Length: 440
Ligand code: ZN
Image (cartoon, rainbow, N blue to C red; front, side, top):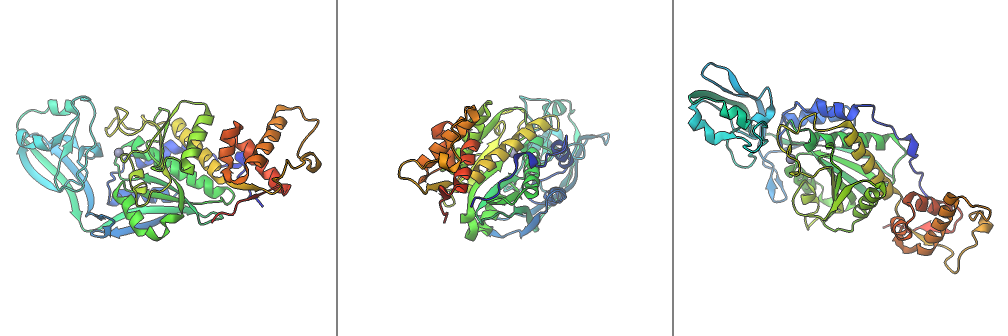
């Protein structure tokens, strides 16, 4: 028997503007790889989908890494001689280099300069900088702001703490019929940057809601909201005994800009997720890019490290570093759109639908064609093109269901739409001409 499949029209839609509203709510929070900004972010996500929150102590060994000290910040500024805040963390949290150690002193502009980061090429934008594993402090400001600062003495303050604490991440699981898992992962460690990565957090959150609201899926879906690199490494270290359950996965990032979608293949290059994503993007008929794996980017670097080599790809719109607003104050609420986030959401949904339905079958009557007309499967009077397509799909499914070819393989080889092929397989199963190959 085949599993009940989600009704296409029954999926709950995000309300108008809902994705952007979640991004806007998360935007002001100062996040880093540890600290209260991540906790607050997870709390807000947890209002929409239940999260299991994990707190991993500083100093915990995780694969080749160690969970760092926890960083928290309350305030930071540079004040001029008149006591005016010329750089103010309260106005924009990008102004402080992430993981800055505390400082409070008076300095001349010349002494301060080595601690100041600007973007000379984009003098109106504030850059985003971090220094997680080298203890230092610094400020980021627009080159225009720096150019306007007179020489003289300034009061510099970063009211932060870097101390033993925890690394925090959140998980949400949608149980499926099998223990085989699909991992959806996104990083939650960037401060006020909308596309990188609040848009993906919003897309993943709504995807989780949609999955939970529908019929029980075939796969179990695990959503991971974790700080980049160290969070994924921590999760992998703590889940080594069950990593093999992860059959497919997607790292979501940069999900809300106006550019076309980009899918980056897993290290394997031919994993089912690679085929499904390429198929869905191609079938959309819209501009898109599919690129090969490279050991750089987001947390696909960890999931696709050779020891794990998971079938995890990455979906973005414009990839990291390819848009001028990347890692700057230009990646703001105006840079991401509801429409783009919905488009990303629908595309992921389509990819998951293909994964859910794609499986291998066995033709139970493989010697000659079975007589379809006798079983009511071949409409001899039919002339409608969709009927013809459905009949062609049955012939293809019967012919290639030798246990080696999956439905997506059959759709690609026949040139027929995947849904038509999957519907044909279902009809043939109902007529006991086909049965799914048992998966180990
Ligand atoms: Zn980033």
